[in-house]
View 1 (cartoon, rainbow, N blue to C red):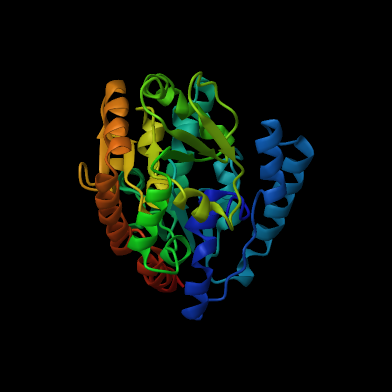
View 2 (cartoon, rainbow, N blue to C red):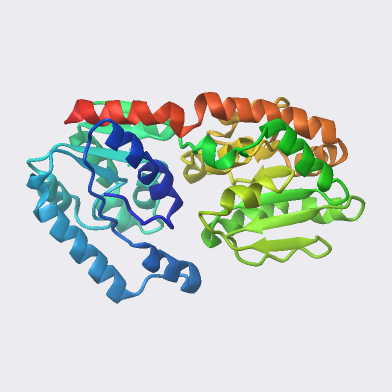
Length: 356
């Protein structure tokens, strides 16, 4: 039960990309998305869901839960019925074991809400669901710790990963990377990939990039986001598409992941970083949450602790092609070993089979 269709990154990479591995393990899977891709696309376009779309979505999910007993296991992304009373959701999950998967700290939607009434009524909602699950799969240790504190029976950490065969060029990867970098040497590209809702993090790069643009030539590519105001910076916008995202990132030279320092960000799983590194790019990222676990500081990229660090580290990489290639190689090897679906696919299949 993913939250979204293929347009939603969390559903696509935490669940849907595992389908071939589950079939290989002879596990039959039926997916029922709460919010199909067309509804998510509308939210990206208008900034909200329509009430009609939400009513249809929740109606479809309720119908799916009412026939839950025809399945041996429910695999749920985050929660089955967001913002509904937890007693109702628990009632609709009775009789069938369920597994919860988290790549975001969704419990903070409730326990850190600005409305004190929401905090009182819903503050332990996710904890209650975790406690009733046969297994909680967490994308990082911050999420896993919350699951353990909630009393979950079994907790496993499975990072957010990519299919390296999709991201890696079909030809010799290092030679291809070197050619890409060489062709971009006159104006290297710094890339950020995300969704309109996460463009807010680019505010952290506004001043550093504007300063850098006064003396260094580069292009800042935004993939999947909305326009931002960065005077003096050569910004290019590329629409996101699943079949072109790897090539769109792979054409660039440096990947960035700025984050605010708050409990919500500590629950993020660093998917952008894994994408960049899978393309052989060095990365510059905020030293927050899971980022320092993914990035080997000064080996596969740089971890940022201050605003001035952004300018310093990006300038260093823009000026040093050899360093970009070296760090990109290190990052690629790390993804192949720890952050590829080729590694976690069999693990996820084994975890789900053990719950059946």
